[in-house]
Image (cartoon, rainbow, N blue to C red):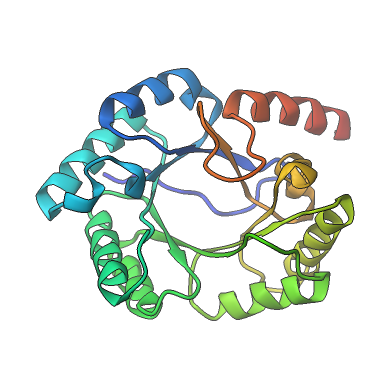
Length: 247
């Protein structure tokens, strides 16, 4: 039975914490969950980081996925698999693995520019698996209007959660991201979003973005999976202080 991933915004603005696992094997997954899993409400498995990722068959992938799902207990499991090589064949292989993931995951993460996005979203809906549609800008921060427009375009994909993560080179960049997120979230019928300002200058967004509509904040285990991440223990501690003071 799949864990139920609740997307309805709670009374508190505090986002759920997602532990993003960048592990080479199942033993590392177990260790990371043991050290950092208690501070998270959602677990993300970056399956492409596994040592055997290039050789996955459906059987071997699902064996790993279901073992990790078991280790997560009652916490929802999100699965992500990125193509690390250019070319149609690499993308095709990654999308095939994401299809397999629908038999184990509670949610899958799909790039907004994935050529198979429409098909994968429809398959996920049939399987009752949630979809997070992601857009990343690793070298710039768009202005607030462009960010709000990104969410509007991504809304049309039919995904359940819309994620925009952009790099903040300075403090003002973080304000742009949060203001754009808030502008979209205040629209009638807006979908749940995730807003992340990557990098050291954007770290505050990982704590306070709930006040601007973000429903999930990503933390890491021993090693960051994105620039500026806190581990989940740190992130939980900072959120405890921030949201306690806010209330």
